[in-house]
Amino acid sequence: MSLELAGILLTVIIQGLYVAFKLGKFEEKLVTLEKKQDRHNNLIERMVRVEDSVKSAHKRIDDIK
Image (cartoon, rainbow, N blue to C red; front, side):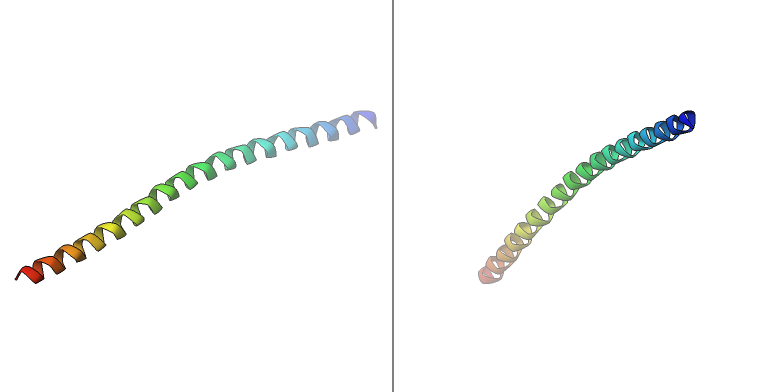
């Protein structure tokens, strides 16, 4: 009985370590995705400013004509 209990305990510990390892990897991937999303959002904000600038430039060109 004691040997079975030790085996079960060892299995639970190993499984716990495995889950902790996988959660750590998940956390790393999540951080990477957040960085990519931040860069994408920054690009979107910059493109909105560029589009506004282009609209303004087109309006000035039309006024010159």
